[in-house]
Amino acid sequence: MLPVALFVFLIGAILRWRMDQDFIKEMGQALLDTKQKLEKDLKGLSRHDVRSKQGFDAEFPDYGDKEDENAAEVATFTDNLALEHTLEGTLEDVNAALSRIAKGTYGQCRYCGKEIDQRRLRARPESSSCVNCKKKKLGQA
Ligand SMILES: [Zn+2]
Image 1 (tube, rainbow, N blue to C red):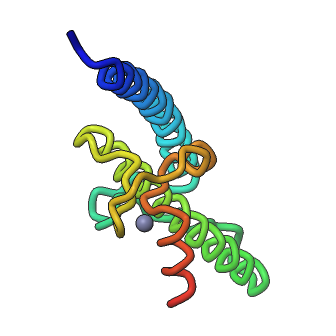
Image 2 (cartoon, helix red, strand yellow; image 1 turned 180 degrees about the horizontal axis):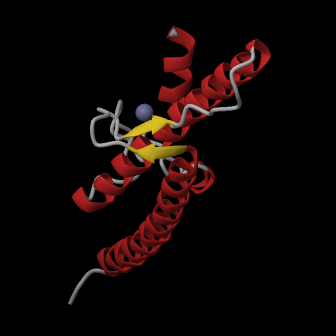
């Protein structure tokens, strides 16, 4: 017969494992939703261009040929480009998180290997580092 302590430990481990699976499933769904939204936003912002290395090129708007109109075109183009880079950066993080789920390493800090707090993942499912490492990284920058 199993010692009671071991039995309790096993039940705890199974419950914890199940909880983790549910949590990861939930995060996976959130990541897929974010991915779809980002891709839609990027499509709205850019036209798909196979020649572009990044896959997306910001559309250069055509408002007219007067000088102030050209300035407005450049301003819109610059804004779109900045937004596009932000969206692409987030999309990369989301894709990386999805591949970590596939590899079974989701929720582990990429710097120290410890588990990332679930509240942090819930707030930002694509997080790849724990709060401590993130703080250290920001402190060094
Ligand atoms: Zn860490």
